[in-house]
Amino acid sequence: YILLSWSTNTTVGILGYNLFRGTTPGGESSTPLNSTLISDTTYMDEQVAAGATYYYVVTAVASDGVTQIANSNEAEATVPTP
Image (cartoon, rainbow, N blue to C red; front, side):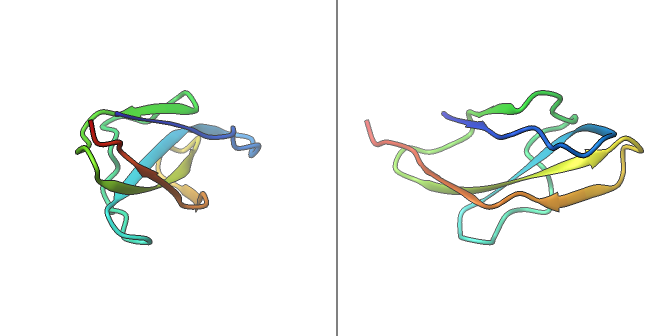
């Protein structure tokens, strides 16, 4: 698994976060990993393969539940091979 964490968005009126994953730099999916908004600032991605590298961005969602605020910087993580 990959445990991700990020800093709280300081913008007032944040409802939660969406997390996007890709397998190439800048290639994150347009569909979030999470099925409901993430209310915390951590997420455990358990759908990963040993030895694979993944790229992630987090987007804050405004209190209207629709407006997505700018993506975070991209994070890279490689799953260790057992």
